[in-house]
Length: 363
Ligand code: HEM
Image (cartoon, rainbow, N blue to C red; front, side):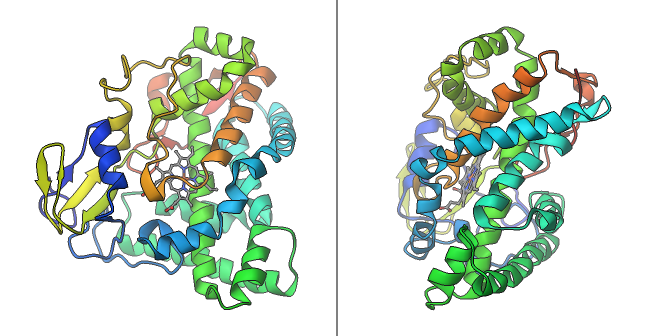
């Protein structure tokens, strides 16, 4: 397979093989290694603290500093606040002239506001991370442009960390500034890198899931009705939507550090691996009639959040946000409709995260 960065790589497609590769101790996420199958042409650089591109043990040390914030118990306690925020944003949407853009008015501000509150980032500064995150997930820009966008978020966060050190609050960045940077456990650059990873991962993903799920539910009205009538079925439905849509759709990337066997072939040290999660999530050996959306399906074993040591840290938050936002949209606007023909919906395909740029809706 030809990629901007190298000659031939392995495309891993079966569910079992994908899990084996992602859990294999001899695969690396370090995108600066010679031969790494990067998605973009150009020079790549690893930012300090951007632990999604680091290997253990360094990766684990940084990740563990954040696990408390994302623990299920902590996220569950946020549910009443998430519901109130959803209600407020949907009320504001109701005041908009129709058709209104669901992405701009709800799908993006909802997760953005949530992470701003959790991390202690002033929402008024959202331009910095919303704009630059959009560039970062765009696969049509060069590696240099993507790097500049990431650096802009990191520079902003370096300033914010200083502010938190002077004036700490009850939020994640204050905790990093006071407990980790002051003590010398993290450099300010590492803390800012961790923060930029969280900001980017935290809103681009959920925002796109909300947009795409809304369209998917409107195209399956019987299932939508059942979902609204049976609130206890919402968690199962959200996992099926995560499986069906698999928004991190450009293939996770890894490089082999040693020779190993997978699915009957030998992967050699130095070989690149491209791992499309949607292929695992549509594997008929694991999911019956995988191309069908079936909200009653028990799909929690899907790989939309990845697998292995880098499996999504934010998944309890993402699940809670989707479980609250999706039913609320349709309860608030029972007659919700997309205001353009399906063919005209602005799907974003050339991106790390599949999604929708704009979704005009009416009700
Ligand atoms: C529907 C929403 C989401 C999806 C589908 C998703 C998907 C993923 C996937 C596939 C990975 C694995 C990447 C890899 O192995 O290379 C990942 C990692 C990660 N995600 Fe998410 N994510 C979502 C929401 C979030 C949220 C809300 C946050 C935080 C606020 C978050 C934070 C992270 C972080 C920090 C990592 C890196 C973990 C590590 O390297 O140990 N994600 N996500």
